[in-house]
Length: 205
Image (cartoon, rainbow, N blue to C red; front, top):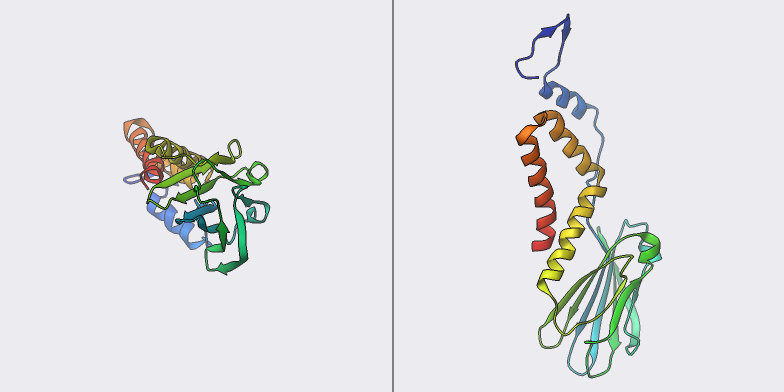
């Protein structure tokens, strides 16, 4: 540690030296991703709906899940598929009743098996936006007339906490804080700030 000298004939290396040694032997690493699938429905007057089904390109569970569309909507034409470095997109045109999507049920099949989450984004013809976070315990929803901003923020705050708790990179970072700060108020403040920041930012977004 800084200022440390010899103790019982042994030299204790400084943290910077330890970090340099670890970096020399490091290999390529990837951070724990936060990339749930997205089901987006954009409705227009007259019942025309554009669907986007987006899944992570490197997600192993993507093949096990599929969107659940409103029963009253019919598929028009063949789907269009595109792939980039991060995502696989499937676009499809739907023909839904003129009354619109409010009151219809949408969801994602297969979340129970994968244990993951999925995002739903619905844009109504008058500009209203409905957003929801689906989970294995609640894999579908009935599209409401208006969304609850507090409910959306709470759902994404919970997603941030889950992302933090399940990421090995995050846990290693917290472990590094424990080693560097050695307990006390500074450690409590640092861990609290890291946790709050990781949870508040998805809620704000």
